[in-house]
Every structure is written in structure tokens, then in C-alpha cells.
Length: 264
Image (cartoon, rainbow, N blue to C red):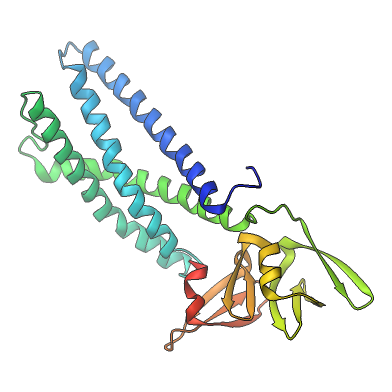
């Protein structure tokens, strides 16, 4: 991925790849379905198969926007793994209903333009909904896994910066600290305290300058504190709206509610 691309652009490109493969898969399914029907002696019109696949694809595009947001909201460490998986499982039901509803609406309109009546359920509404749900639920989890990977990967990559190490001059000692080993950083007067692998060093810089160098793999949780996103293992929101995070090494840090969304 080119280093000059912003985090949003990286996400758009990755999403475009997912959507492209979904479109290709829909086209292949349509061709295969038409071939099977023709082989069985059916005289179904090709445009009907195209409408069926296109309507499902367009409906999934809408569902993708919802799933993307759900993945950002319902994910560890913000929520424990068992709860997150359970909530995503429950979300498959309304997402499937949304997909079915949009798909049927689009097909009815398209078939009407062709002078044909579209009957989704053929008198078996519940059976047809369950049939569609059995197909939709695995698709939901595949998309959720893909979106989770995209969000995770783009959070880790520095935006427009290719830094493997952060050079820190601490008195007479110069440290070359791997960025992916830095757990957190905190402003300390005219310095920034860099913490990594149980060690710490004072770097003469502003927190804003350090934040810019570290890139998108780090989040500001307080006006004077940064954490590496991937080091966060637990996040607890307090009644005041502030929050605490626990890092891999057991360190607990306080975050301000003003910066709560930075970890989403």
C-alpha cells in the first residue's frame, strides 16, 4: 500500500476490493444459475436472472454500510469476545430482513417494468425467509470478518509515514525504539515519556509531534496521553463518561470522555 495514501483512502481501496469480488461472485452465480435452468429445460429469461443477482448485490451494498458500523462499535477490546460474537449473531436477523426487504422491493419494480409479476414467497413466506436467512447469515460473518480486518489493518499503519523505529534522545543515551513495541506515551512538561517493553525514556518533543510521527496505529485517549491501539486489551467506560484502558502488560490508563471515540 503506498505510504502517501491517507487512512480513509486505504480503507476505500480495501472496501473497493471486497465490493469488486462480491460483484464478480454475483455475476458468476447468475451465469451458473442460468446455465443450470437452461440445462433443465427452463425457458426463463436471462434478464430475470440478471435482475435477481443485481437486486441482491445492491441490497447487500446497503447492508454493508450497516455491518461496517456494527463492526466498529461491537468489537474487542471494547466488548468481550463472547458478548461481541453473540451480538453479531443477533444482528444477522435484522440484517437478513433488511437484505430481503430491499431485494424484493427492487425485484418487484424491475419485473413490473418488464411486464411480469414477481412473487417472492409463492405462498410460503416464513419458509422463504428462513431459506434466505440461512444464506445471509454466513455472508454477514464473512463481511464482518473482512471489515474487521480492514479496520484493524488501517489503524495499525501510520498515515503517510514509513517509520519502523522512533529515535529518542534521552540525555546521553539515544534509543531506537520499534514503533510497534511502544505501548503508550505521555506528556511530561517539555518532554514526552515513551513507554515500551517495561522501559521508558524522555523525548524532548511535544505530544502532538510524537503523535504525528507514530501515525494511525496510536490513539489519543487524553490531552496528555497516547496509546497503541493494538496494545489495548480492555476498555471500561466509567459513569462520568471517562474511561480506563488496560494494556497488554497490565498497565491501566485513564482516558477522557472527550477522546472516547478515538478507540472506536
